[in-house]
Image (cartoon, rainbow, N blue to C red; front, side):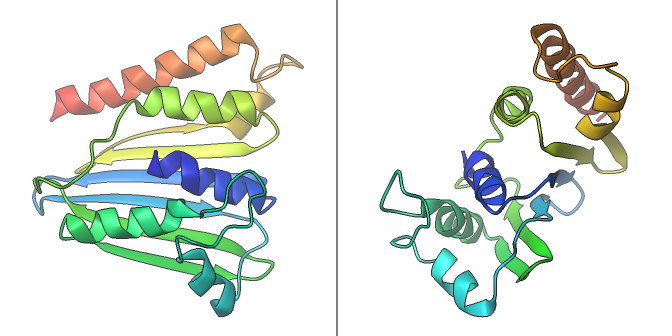
Length: 177
């Protein structure tokens, strides 16, 4: 759920490109999650507000829990959290977690999460990288769109292909390990 919340923040900030990077370093017992966008960005004052769970720019709810919960989850799992942003340049959110820590939240179904985002926001270019040690899988919706010859990226047949591709790519990484 952290990923959905943070990416929705990027979308609200008018990002046209969102990069999600998930890395597992088994040697160092470390998991990294990074979300980077080219949205509006924030100044230092807005960053501080964004980390306050009782602040949100969304009109549908009164709380802005995404960043603050991700920060707390990272710290609870002996990790770290950082956010860098510049007005007009975008935002980069980084979190780390001790992989074996009992309080580390599970990854969940990444293929379903990404497909949900792609279906709901076909106008956005998503780039996803999943890395386990030295092995890496990635998918780039901008590259996929360029090969669709006018077929919408959120059409059922394309979505089915993307979901299978992501699931198989991540499964292959896990089998290699």
